[in-house]
Length: 101
Image 1 (cartoon, one colour):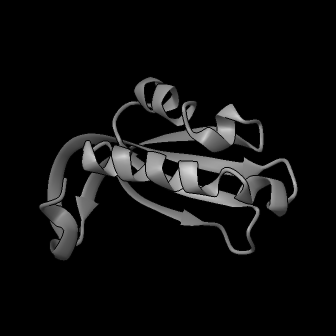
Image 2: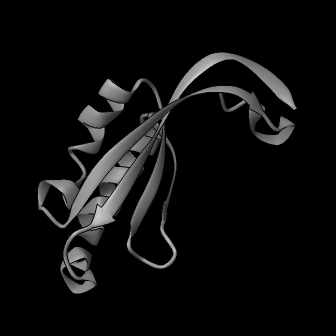
């Protein structure tokens, strides 16, 4: 286990508010948006909830900054999902991923 300085992190929890066939219309743009955020080092991971009722995105940063990015997600912009931000302070990480933070 690796101790880290008080690192601000945020989860963005997406909730689909339209049927999956409407959500899927925007999936390609959503995935491109995720790739861009990961390339910029802002987002660390992304995945669909099980069952597929939304998504979970892990970001570096304070809630306000992450909210500003999350609200540009094509799912949110096109009204097929809403987003909730859960801020937390990362203080410990397993050795295998500790250097990512």
